[in-house]
Image (cartoon, rainbow, N blue to C red):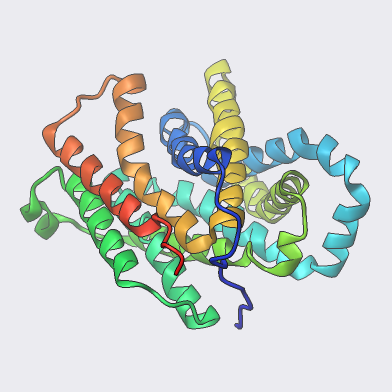
Length: 310
């Protein structure tokens, strides 16, 4: 599989305040999936949840897609396979498969494994696009990943010896690789030519289409459906924040900063998840949380700081 992608040019306009704001909000919105997802786990089938998530997102975005219908139809006709592949990678595997995997593995394992998506993004850019990896970027990634490990392992390195990996962990690793490919494909010229909002509406529709067969199979096999006001409230949160806001912010970051730097936002997910769990779920903030957050933030700044022009 050959990926043609042009790395961000050093002559590109400097990012604006809104660009950095969306860059930092992306992990906040992605992390909200943890808060809402906790209320869904065990209450609904994983693929049913993912289908409702993206079908609802597509429905909300439908007025925008309709307004740009000629451009959207032209895009789907010219890039039908790419459109469906993005739905499989970004919404199918990173949706239904992840929800299913979380029924088999722990949130700690999933967080640590999924964060490696940033590493795969840079690796794939190096393999397929000839991207050079600087020592500064590598150093920032190592520092940020150390912060993730400190959070996940609760400051106890010996805990790594007791971590057990299962089929759910393998599924999360597949999702991390899938998200890396999704991020890189967003830089294809045909994708970049589309306005962000109608593009997101098309991708949500693609996700709903590819998730429909497994969701129907799950329902026919006796899968659980939403049946309480709380279930629908959690689904609403997943659609509005973990889907619409999160993916739009991330796609904007990919467009402005490139997939390598945009992928670094994943390193902010563990500290963001912890802070949100403290605020909304009443969990305790520990010293290793603070240590991990400092490392993650430092590594992120080091890896994404713009280089000075000669």
